[in-house]
Length: 421
Ligand SMILES: Cc1cc2nc3c(=O)[nH]c(=O)nc-3n(C[C@H](O)[C@H](O)[C@H](O)COP(=O)(O)OP(=O)(O)OC[C@H]3O[C@@H](n4cnc5c(N)ncnc54)[C@H](O)[C@@H]3O)c2cc1C
Image (cartoon, rainbow, N blue to C red):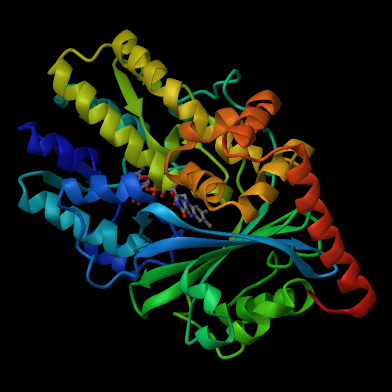
């Protein structure tokens, strides 16, 4: 997206990639990478929206707050202010490279090492490293002041499925979340899969060592789907019918692992003293719990396109560092939004979610957080602002008490009669 933005502004762009467009198509499954509204708009502005007719637009979110009994304690369901879209990154990366070449970029297929980067830096005014979380990150030291974690917070699993039974659970027409605090968060994302078309991409975020952490030894897609069905049977039984007829979209469209969220210093200095700018996961790696990685990469690409165009040339280390610091005024909200859900929610945050289950405007504001974390974190992370926020929406202490009693009644009925009311 940065390349497309700069080409449009008349810059010469060279794109280095360790894979050809065809390699990407043959690759194993890549992360879900659902783009929220503003990122979808940006992609469209850049003319990189090649799948609008095929991809299932996401207009609503359905979020179940679950208890381990298991049961759904309450549900938040609301439209998104702008539609989201999840398209297989194998399609995007493959087509995107070809598109940039057609628009005039030099596309070079090469695995770039640090010494090669030195040569590249000699030949260009600015080098931007967007190699993701696993490559060339040694150039960018950890920023201790901005990094929160030293260990993974979740065991991650992702799988794309087809042939599920939508009639067994029509909630899956929307993007669905299943949150079971202390156990798992799960996303069921309407998705355009390279091989199987309109499908669902499922992401499980399991508490390490807990009852949902059961994908570590999985070796094949079929084993993964069996483990997923077992998880649904034990923890989310109302999802079993949806999964019963499902099949993996291919033998390779699944991932399992973990990551340590980190923020790195965005400007690396090569042995020659030349600076290079890092963006995307190479610099800001968040747990995917809040679906921010690809969206944040898009925000960074958009922000730096404008900055680079304004500057034109002479990209010194100090200037690049200043620009990233300015980006961080916004970027810190993205990290706060990602991290707040990695920790146990405080009582006032639970009350906010409960209020969202009863109030469409609050529900809409919660879900807008995915698109614009800065609109969300102030009132969701500060007790005083949370109270004011609820009051502004006509929700007072007595209302919250009434909501809590409603949930307590539902839980009691489930425990005593084994059914939900
Ligand atoms: C399970 C899961 C689900 C996710 N879901 C979401 C979601 O719903 N929404 C969201 O916004 N984010 C999501 N993410 C995060 C998102 O996928 C990443 O944040 C995003 O892809 C990062 O983009 P990037 O361009 O920085 O890096 P990458 O997507 O990793 O791209 C890096 C590119 O650089 C190339 N490369 C690497 N090393 C070299 C080298 N040395 N030389 C040349 N080329 C190289 C790679 O081939 C690759 O094409 C998810 C992540 C996971 C793990």
